[in-house]
Image (cartoon, rainbow, N blue to C red; front, top):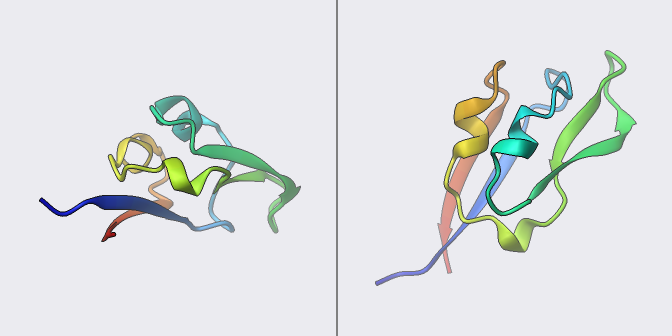
Length: 74
């Protein structure tokens, strides 16, 4: 069976930094950036990309739908 690693892409300019994705992530992959986007919000990003399993919990729970989840074969 093939092994997979997950990856997320966050639409930084649309992210409001609510943190719902952070609590939804079982692998503690996501954190809020210290920088802000054009609207003044700290946005979500992959702080620990090696731990992502591509479960899509973050994308499902994001209230604004700004997270896309991908799986890539190793």
